[in-house]
Image (cartoon, rainbow over all chains, first blue to last red):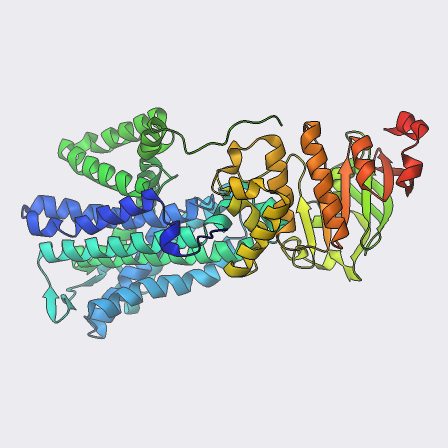
Length: 326
Length: 230
């Protein structure tokens, strides 16, 4: 019997499309020069990373609101290393902004992953609430309410990344990296994640060490949020607690739900659409939040599986067996 | 192999198992028969750790199961196929079956799958199909294969014939006999006593969370018992 064991052979169409889209997006900085468009695309790439962080946890039926907390850890790690320790090499900063949130998530995961359902949601929201307080109350490390300003330009292959187009390229590359990590994780551990999502108790009775896979997912989710934080502080050239407010976690969850949580294309589509819509609505002044809310309500009512889910429904079903008598 | 003594299970104020004791000897196929609400599934769920016990003891090969976490019981050699199949519908047949073998390497998983496919040929034909699209009988085979994928010493089958056509019951009965011949001990529950008693060596009749009668299947198969209890 033929057995498919390599990761490449197990990657599905949605993952291939997602990777192809992100690779193609690397060309965007060479075609876009308008400052507003560059800024919008950079925000979309950061949104994609935040949404992928949520998506990983949703593979295990865990709704996470702690994305801004891990973004803050990743962002401040990069800011502290570059401002206080003169580390400007982009590869070192990427490794640190992924690695530190990943490591912080290990002990946190042992604490919060014991909880399920609404309790897990609440605890992760509390983590997001606590993080700005920690940033404000530790001025020696984080600059407190002043944040850390004046970040030096990061350097890639000896060239500084300082103009907005270069930063867009870097953020797109980070989003591509986050997509590749997400694809690898969710494919390698797909049976385990799906067992946990569909029936964790049954999975445990089959010998599945659910806590182990939840920790893996939580740590990688934190690492990807850290990359988003790094991208955000590089875009703003400053690290400030207000950039990581707990309420921004709702945006990352909305990107994933509106885009569609059943496929990795969902976070990409959701982030692109909602960040674009958010920017468009912001031109309407006071009613911008109301318009954004209406868009969310419409999306949830008319596209319950998310935008990608609706498109999936229009396609023929996956190959089904001939029905036989039971 | 499996010794259960004075086991009690409660769901809130409801007594599901009332100090029951059973023995499952090595390499035997033991059947628990009884109507709905007799406590058969509660007993299976207690053995695998899905419901807490309120008293008594369970010992598997000398190990006190109370000291073994539910996720570690499979590692001790206990395989489980739940009532109503409960396959993972959005996973392929192959992923479903190998969900029970998550602790072994990929090469070993391929061998295990090939071996199970010789017993259940549909695993070969439908390996990449989504399990949710299979018929009831096929899903039952997937659930049993999943339980067997970790090469258990004790196989727990909760109502394996439930809602199945005779042709599937026959195939599953044959598979259970094969497992038994290869040295696997089986403990199964079933409402359909007639086909179940054909594959078992010993049996227990349950009602209202208690054991009414036990013994070799020849005794339990008698018409009087069938009329009275089953």
